[in-house]
Structure formats: C-alpha cells, structure tokens
Length: 168
Image (tube, rainbow, N blue to C red; front, side):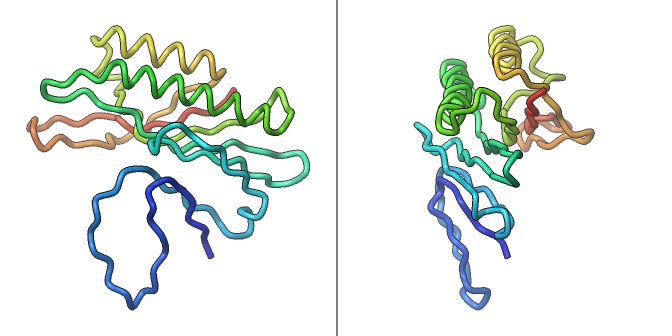
C-alpha cells in the first residue's frame, strides 16, 4: 500500500469510481505505507513544493522534496519567481534541520526544475541561480539520459527539464 501526501488536494479514490479531470495546482508525493509512519511534513510557502522528512531507522533521516520551478515561455519572464523557488528550497532545508535539531540531514530534491543544462546555458541569470542553489545545498544536480520534455510548440525540441538534487 502507498500513502499520498502533498499540496494539490488529490486523494486516492476507489477503483470503481471514475476520476474526472480537475485542474489543480501543487504536488503530490507517493511513499510506501511502511516508511510513512515516521514521515514528518514540512510546511512550505507555496504549493510548488511538497517536503517530508522520512525516518528510515534511528540513524537515517532523509528530507525528500518534490519541486516545481517556474518556466520561462512565450513572452513571460519568470526569472524572479525561479529565484524565489530556489530560495524556498533552501529555506525548506533549513526548517527541516532545525526541526530535527540536526546540522546534517540527507536531502533529495526532485521534480520539474524547468532548467535544461544543455539548452539554457545561454540564460546566464537562470544558470547562476541554479549553480548557487546546488552549491549552497551542497548537492549535485543529475538529469536523466533521455529528455523529459518534448515541446508541442517547437518541432523537434526536446530538453531535460526534470532533475534530481542529491546532497553530497
């Protein structure tokens, strides 16, 4: 069995109940029921983050953060919102560390960072924000081998917008 936690308002429904599409904002994180007993939710400022501390055993506590970072698209420039999201991720980690009275908490952040290390290098500001965030979180940034996004607007445009930050 699994536990659904998050900020979107989604919930599990019986298989016989037909799901209808409802536009929601926010994220959900799915965890196994046997590890969710020690789960400590961390409140966030926006529904674009779902953060939980998972206690695997007495010595192993992991902060798992599911993220959504704003994209730039069309005529909109969301660089400020992107920077705010990076600040929020750093704030979440600080809150979790204080909550456990631990200076060292293993952190894994995953999701839609809306940043492609291949295609967004020319965006100096966004690149600097990502580099600063990765450095301050003492993490490494990983992307899958295959692109995670295929544009409907730009033919043959694929990018690696989803990623994973793992604390070093």
